[in-house]
Length: 472
Image (cartoon, rainbow, N blue to C red; front, side, top):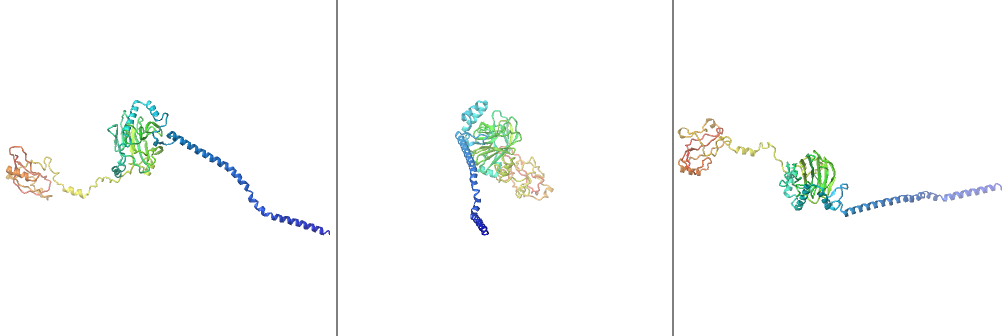
């Protein structure tokens, strides 16, 4: 019995152990599914952190966009033009001048603070443009001008001053301009053709060849007709960059500082984009920011003005630009060489069959005539030889040896009677016969001869009898 007790306890213990193992084995699949469920509580924690940040960022962007829209609406409602610090001047709203009292207030205050001659020139230009508004004259490129551009290239452009109104400037070689001293008013010159509107960009440059410190040069674009006594940028429908570093448009009181000063030797470039009406400037090959936009309404002409003596040279594309980008992209007004063929070089006429034949057709005796004689002279004298036959220098053995170039014209003998001589004079077609005068004069015999150079190679003539003509 004692042996049985431990055995039963052992069996109970073993059964308990097996039961526990079976229980554990039965719950083992649940243990395998628990590890993937462990990170699930962490996902709501990440969303709770990122969601507030996204809300704050979107709210900030929405507020910023709303603020910008409000600013644009307010500026458009008030009609305030963008200032230089904000970007280029919008010329589509050129009449909206920023200032107290609007345009009239700014204009009146400016007129009160300027000299009398400046006020007089301003009012004179204002009246001029009221009488001659833009496009009052035809400014579009005509068919003949277009063909001229095709043939000549950029040489079709030239600066043409109005000498009837302004005589204080000179133009040499189409693009070299010299301004003379004129204390009365300023001077301006424009090109004969406007800027085309076919390409993306048109560009031209002006070199300050001679620029005193007391002179201000203005370079820009303007419409036509434009007051020739006003520099560009000081009257309506014009923009300009001035040598003192300012830019202005339409009125002198719109001048603002834009770039560096210009001195002698500097090169100022003007670029124009027809599609957007944008105007930009370059200085010594370095591009500055855009100065004006919205200039696509009118035909614009390159314009140069000055208020004192100076000399400038314009490059419309006939030579290389200082601005490298303009050279690479060919921004000139037109090709430097057109379709018209250049003139022939010197010496090319040598060997020409046409000129050679024409040279041989000319008589050789024209250059050998004596200075005092003429082939058509009615009065000729010849010394009479023995036997009543006039002696002639043609009767020479040396001259008779040369063969003739052309046979001599036939000579018709004329009767010695005056009436017969007069009739023979009218019927004869020989230009060497003398003309009869209507004056009554005593008859005087004049020997009719033919003077030929001794150097000419002709055959000896047959002896003819002496011919006398009488004046009636």
